[in-house]
Image (cartoon, rainbow, N blue to C red; front, top):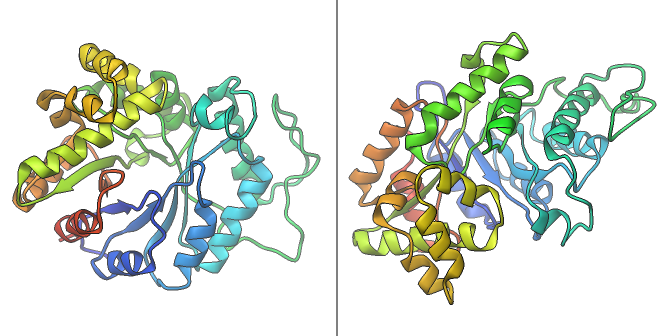
Amino acid sequence: MSGRERTGVLFSLEDDLDLVQRAETLGYESVWTAEGQGRTAFGKLERWATVTDEIGLATGIVNVYARTPATLAQAAATLDAHSDGRAILGLGVAHPGVVEEFHGVEFDRPLARMAEFVELVQRYLRGEPGGYDGEFFTPKRTRFWDAFEPVREEIPIYNAALGPGNVRLAGEYCDGWLPNLYPLDRFEEAREWLATGAERADRDVADVDVAMYVLTAVADDPARARRAARRHVAYYLRDIPGYYGRVAENAGFADEVAAVRDASDRDAAAAAISDEFLDVVAVTGGPDDVRRDLEDLRSAGVDLPIVRAPAGADRDLVERVLETCAPR
């Protein structure tokens, strides 16, 4: 895939082998998948590894409360072995709705947990001898059985961070930063947080890959594309507490956040998303418009745009995104 511009694609809940194979054929660098409260990301990626040869296979995301670092390191190393070194780890702290209500685990000290989690996963993959005395985990050994040697001692780890402390943590500990629905006009400030974190670890911030999820809707009728994107944004503000609302409020869209949360139903919530807000968190329109906006994101410092169709989009919209945004 050398020579092509870098582009990834997220199939959030889909488990469609045809789409994954098409993404590889079109030259996408990586394909990402979420799990939330549905199929496990690793289960889908293991399946996808059997029908692909080159494309990176990424969790996008798995949360650091649902598994121990040892379990996650095992899953990642196994996927890496089965795919000949194509695994990518997208991690996140998720939110209380998933962590407490679904997993039944206290949503406690997420940033400290993330830092310890990343450090431990890296130790397991390197096979470092000895134990680890942490605040959350105290394993007596951080080596796999001798019968299993990881294909790689390092698997790229991306942190799906939004808040200042977590973005700094990404710069300090992780290989990449993975923002979602992040207003582009706040991006320069966030990159400063990332640089601060990198400085703490005596790293060059240029070595931290910025891989942004890009909500993308392509349609010959621009109004159709924007309707689909509006519903997606409204879902995140209305049904996922905390992070996305705070980021939007800090970007000057507090009225929209309040209107979405006060809306009587999902249609009303979507109608509360202003054009101005949509334009800073989504890429919509015809193919030329979308490709132009993706180039603007690259110019703003996004190393790896990861395009995704709106949640609940029909097959046609998903395929239009895949075809339109294919790397050149």
